[in-house]
Image 1 (cartoon, chains in turn yellow, red):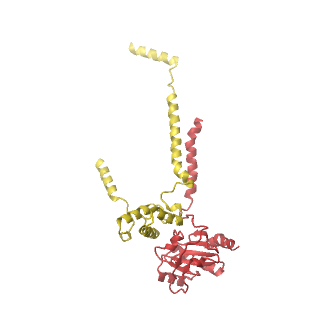
Image 2: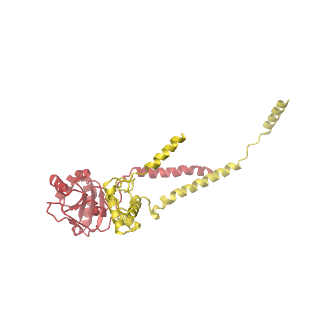
Image 3: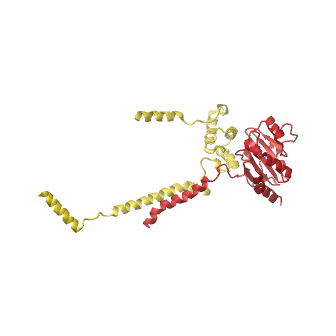
Length: 153
Length: 178
């Protein structure tokens, strides 16, 4: 079982993510290419929606990859490139939504829920500690006594 | 108080369930455009070969309300909306300009010859489709209503059907003319 598990992990590590970037699209400069990939991984493919443009095979994703690379070569900063795309497609195109008033619930919601959960757990546990065990009634302790005495004799 | 505390998680799940139910019923491809009420992007596109116009540029979208349709001969849903576009042209209600997105020039020209040509002017936007991306295109067909000042006022995603035209687009075109 352990070996099987080990094999599985090795295979999973080896597989990695299959990027859709065609070798011919890549920039010759590895530093610029790395930056283009970093920006592209944060941009949603508008056709498939759950993939980044770096992962998607859609034509529109390829076009956006091309444009991101052109901007990297032109010397735009990562933020300038993201702004360029967001000004056309809105925040939706960012796979990591920005932190602002309209996304407050999205960012803070889980924390608030976790807080409520912790509070609830505390109050439940504290109450449980306070409960004292039910003592035997007089009748029951008398029976217990007689049972023990019977056992001894 | 203690009873209420036990009901709280249930209440939270209930609220979330309502949100998710609403979310499930929505089409994730209908992304609201950020370009509404913004001027059309600056562009100048080349003409389709043999069509006899000079292509399409920003200047063509000023002076009167226009409908700008991003389409392509490769796009199946565009075939679906084509008869409606021809009918709109016949009605004379509004000029339709076409942006032929990621298309082969010859195939694009042939497609219009075969299926009829509803467009006033057509601009070719070859890959990587810079002008279409400036319009925030997510797929074809997509149509924009542009007012006389060249400001984008409405975006419709998907094929225009007779119902979409009479119930959504035509009322907007008419109200912009007032």
